[in-house]
Length: 79
Image 1 (cartoon, rainbow, N blue to C red):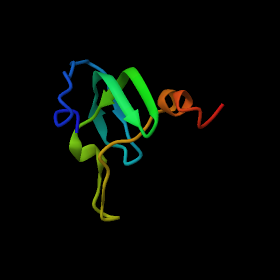
Image 2 (tube, helix red, strand yellow; image 1 turned 180 degrees about the horizontal axis):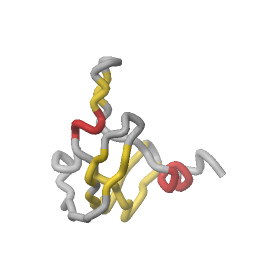
Image 3 (cartoon, one colour; image 1 turned 90 degrees about the horizontal axis):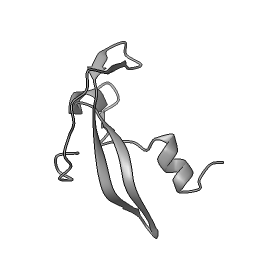
Image 4 (cartoon, rainbow, N blue to C red; image 1 turned 135 degrees about the horizontal axis):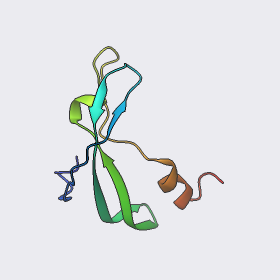
């Protein structure tokens, strides 16, 4: 998704362990602008994970991405 959005992906040495116990390397990017309906967010930090980290074949799901708490707070969805 990050490539499709035309983002510049930056490398890190960091990794995360998901709910399956699999360790995934993370990278990051900054989106200059993200629009959600009437809301426009600028300079949003994104964590970029490999596509396979979002595939849940047991459930027949393939997730393109998800919103983190800073974005949800910026949208004033939670306090």
